[in-house]
Image (tube, rainbow, N blue to C red; front, side, top):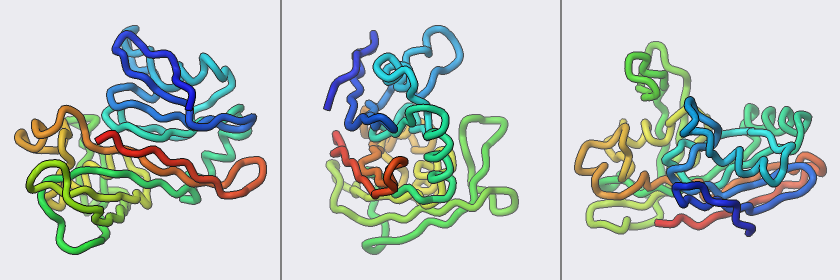
Length: 219
């Protein structure tokens, strides 16, 4: 993996894969995916990738607090192609998280509709009447690093904003270190959000061959 230049915050991102059609980067927690409002929020993963690959285009995003794999298209035609694959749920994404408590069983699904909490943006909330259908699958990986915590593999079948964070909190097992959805003691239990995009699998835009990339969780 090639390391991208670090910003003044010292957060280092890495290139996992690059070819004529796409770039896959490994984002550290605390780094924006795209520029935010204000001069102090211009350093981001997309800017760092574009410094090496000027034609790189954003296809999907990770929350600033989430680390892990993020794919960029090279050129607008590939961006449209990959965007359609994400919209059609033809991209296999997996995350690792450490949550409070122990969910019952070895695997399960969380099927709860979500919408933005307009007075408290960017927070999202469960809303059975007006929320958009949202589905998360989870699988137990083992005990977490702290007593009373569990390590899970998560599959967001849909791709709503903050979906994994809201869904886990909604069933009583918030992700450690989550500043938006975890109660104080769970938020304080980790120095960062313990959520990492660990695996990404998709059809290559040039050949349609399924290619997979992985990144071990740093926690």
